[in-house]
Length: 306
Ligand code: ATP
Image (cartoon, rainbow, N blue to C red; front, side, top):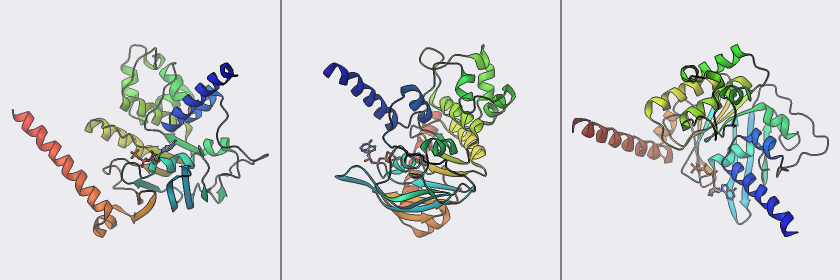
């Protein structure tokens, strides 16, 4: 029995680790073939997507009953609009994206897509409707073409190249000696965090989902790379219902609505200008980030003149 349960525990561990990191979600189930934590109801119908409106209604959630993570969270992402979730580290921002993708079921309230509770429809159809650009993309040990085509295996070469160009990674791929046939991943070419993220964006452009979840990288990218990625993300989110999990504030200024999460509760909501005028938590986070950015810039100038 011990021998039998060991590998199962091991698979469980990998599964939890992958889930925690929001690694390539769809790939995870395909690769590990592990029973997911949430189960479909018998004969659950497909999600029917029309306008692609996302609604959280009084959502509560805990991983461990002793520690509530989300408390009575309600908001809507209207069709084609962008809502950004910001807040201090550990506030529960990434948990919101995990719940929408139905990694876990809510413990209170409900999540609706076009009026359908995501617990009442099958998970595969929910995940097909959502494009997820995670913080850290795990690449398959295969060619860069395969990794991008994973978004839509039937895509033509022309579509593949257009998606890569749109994600600002086409030029880089074409500069490689083997181009799109370059092997990446563990045994192949190692890509930087920013390059991997652009591969994930190209994959999402090919998948063309009605709903997008962008979990912004926490790790600092250089300003140029960050701007390129931001441009690629802006293109892919145009006209799509988009939820941005933002760990930095600079990227959310143009969101239709910003939701400020503090210890699992919504503390403030509004546009950037409204929240700045309010002078609350968002305004103080904003001025702190501005000061830090200005200090870093002064330091760079001092170093440059040395
Ligand atoms: P950050 O900006 O630092 O990424 P966040 O706001 O995205 O933070 P979450 O990742 O949603 O925060 O985590 C919220 C809380 O839930 C944290 O205190 C975290 O420790 C806890 N948590 C996250 N995943 C799990 C898990 N699988 N099991 C138990 N607790 C968890």
